[in-house]
Image (tube, one colour):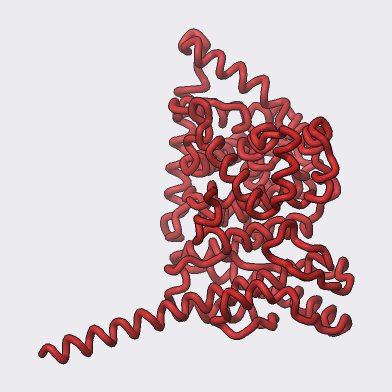
Length: 458
């Protein structure tokens, strides 16, 4: 009997070891694939700092190619099933990754490997890009068409971007506005939309005589901020759009008295509003008019925005409470991460007397909406929402990658020039490719540092 117990224990240990090796192998493969994608985007430029690339690699000009896609890092739970593993294998069919299970040392040295000849590189990249695009759409369709949507699979797909016409359904699922069970979706949405209407009638559609002084002041502040929201996009200057923003924000603030309304939350509603309106309005956003919609459709869009905003902010409540301690904590983490990744930039900013709070506070407060062209915000938010509860910590890596995009320029500027530069970053001509570059670097640094917090200790 004792021998049987010993044998069983040995078998369990062996099985545990095999599962762990398989999971680590999958993560290694993902890391290597993402590192190659970044190399393809860099086109011969080093990543800021001294961590990743030890030697410049002259890649052929691939500016006209489809930007490579990459996948979100998997948790151990995500990688635990054979079905999940086989799907990831399909996504990497166009890659030339090293065998699974390569060491950490090989990860750091991969950048010095010879690059295949230009014509072969271009052929593989262009073919792989087209195939991956159609394959990704098919994967989204497969996940969304099931009776029960597997949210882990949906998050993994959404991390790398969601097709425009699928985005409203995907965002509702990721934020819990719609249930993963398709049979319950219509009923749940109807109930949530009715509840929102009741909240509006109780909180917003009342005379000022029934409001407290604080509530009157808060409503006035919201009314002042709405016309300032995304001023570069004419659509948001429409009176009906600003009225919808006002209703959503005020209702949310009354229902969340711990924080109430804080300037910057108005920006966070805008991606949701555009995405859910896209189900009802066609063409470019500059041609949209809210007057084309019925009051029922407008109230449904507002309700979905309200519930999605609520879920998003539930994961970062202390970002908007008194003194906003959550943001201050993340700004400190950003400073430490930049110091580890690019010490010359960190030292220069310190010598010039520039505090990270002077520019990064707005980044965390508005989640970069004011820093990049609005047409790129929805793609960025695909990754935000796919991160789920892990988003606040991952923002630190995205913002470090965003900042160090301009490491060379930063080193040339004095204090006054740094303040002006970081408050008006030259992103007006950015495309998806620059954004993918930021996300790729963030993914790698998160992979390297997140499981080794000692790297970020002083």
